[in-house]
Amino acid sequence: MTTLTRFDGVFTALVTPFTATGAIDWAAFDRHLDRQLAAGIAGLVPVGTTGEAATLDEDEALALISRTKARAEGAAYVLAGTGSNSTAKTVAATRRAVEAGVDGVLVVTPYYNKPTQAGLVAHFAAVAEAAGAAEVMLYSVPGRAGVAIAPQTAAELAARAPNIVAIKEAGGDAARVTALRAACGADFVVHCGDDGLALPFFALGARGLTSVLSNYAPAECVALWQAWFGGRFAEALMLHERLAPLAAAMFIESSPAPVKHALAHAGLMGAGLRLPLVGLAPASAAALATELARFAAA
Image (cartoon, rainbow, N blue to C red; front, side, top):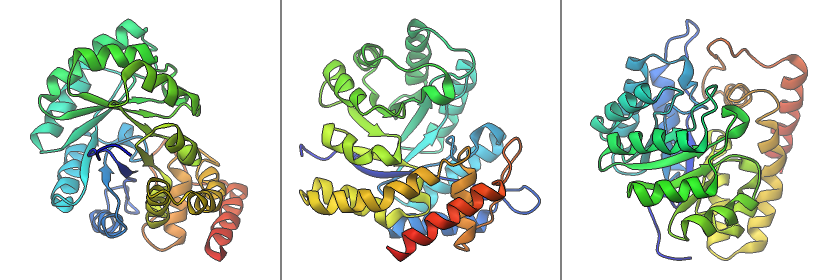
């Protein structure tokens, strides 16, 4: 592997724990952060999709970001989710996050609007300017946003804004790693955004994983990354095969409902969600329980 970057390793797309009344459960959030750091997680990503960002108000989002930054105390990269489907709101959220001291921002493609690639260039360029010296990780997730960031668009943005340095690729296609590296160059960091594809992404040149599963199994996700980049390929394959069924189960229904259910099953926090998300259907809960038991037994 080439020289390490600050994006190497596993980043956790943090869930936001809620109390029974729907408020943020700060005690549970602090325990969750501490567990992540103890497991060797390299990056913490508050206020992303997994954190139910769309249901948080501005004060809650900023408080979560500030809490994460203070708790990490330099032990992990803090990458705040600031994206929305409004460029003006994304710019404002990015400025607030930068003022809170984050290392970088994760900016999703605008959802619902379905902008053209030219629109994506204009959107991300405006956000990058607002980010100042903070780094920007693009986030391509067409299954949620309805539009993907084309490799050439990523390359144009990287050339235009020096602080656009990475992309979280969550389109479910490992071939995108090769296309992005060809367009953007090997120094442009690709992060895997699909837990089940982490190993093939690493093999094709991705430098890290932004994970939902690591909320529940941070040490095992870190072990997979360490095994691959340590050249222990058989061990990496073994870990992948152990983790893959559980990774799939974490999306048995819309995320983060399954991972929150798993965390509650482990006694780590409540399973509460904010509408329009609701708890797992009984059949889904039973299927997830089967995978959790299999994982524990393995």
